[in-house]
Image: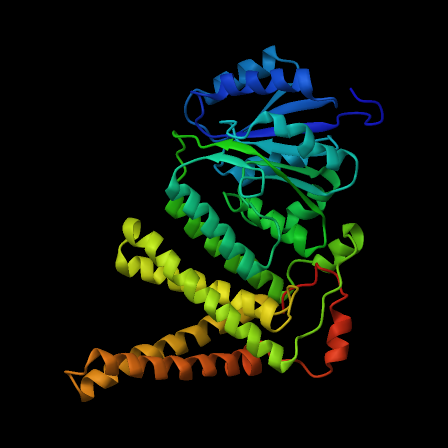
Length: 412
């Protein structure tokens, strides 16, 4: 035990569901590492959420034979349920959790919890997407992970890079304050907790990790992604309605926010809009080439359009019109998608009209019509973005002063 911590410093929760094949090996490996490498006092809790195989018997035996291992069982399924139950009952100063397959190299544990034990940060997460991370997994899971985090960043405007790496820690007092406001009890639990924490002005510390994909993972990726997208919509709605008391949490636990710059000039907006458009066009082409093989032409076109539309709106919001912070973020993303669809409709309809008037139109004429339609659509997009989506509010000086408000201010 390191002097100065006092009492139980760290409790690591390992949520499990039907993990009889790997449970004992993983727990023994984890406790051996902690015994040799962790300078603070620690305890490991196996949090069983309704296993139906031999997991319960194995966990019970381990807790009886190993003094620093505890076992808790719930009769309801869900990783969020397991973490909420174990963290709420803990008397440790720092609470953490690891996936039972130990995909993340345990050497990252001491740097994960150190900034929490010192009081420097509020939450600490491992990231597989940061500089210095070393990750081994298939291209499909890599694409899904990066796409999910990209959508999360652009729609919720969060800064943490990896929402769902199963390697996180939180100060107990922070967990006690945030858990009552986290509704999800499944895989979205992590993401929801992090969104609320960042909106409340809490400090999230990230460390790059070495991570190896578990080939026996039984996670239903499609269902998980669908549930997560629904969760993002629900949390955005709660922030818009003010149902999550981020201001109160900020007042109690938050850190000082950053000052944001003002809006660029009109000429600067025009130049920046053009640059964003050029980058978006290139990104669409590259995404389409990458996705066409595994997904097919129509699916690749849809995904490429969706991702570039979200990215384009986010880039124009911050880079072109100088807007940052959570205010109206979700609304502006929806408005941006509407503007994008209007522009896409104009270009698509132009060809339909041409072919209706001249079924044998030459390719050169088609190109001319498409070019004219694209010029008009681009001008329309800029006008709508400037005057509708990202319009400058009256009393801009007052708005600039408002940028000094807490990062935890709710979406409006």
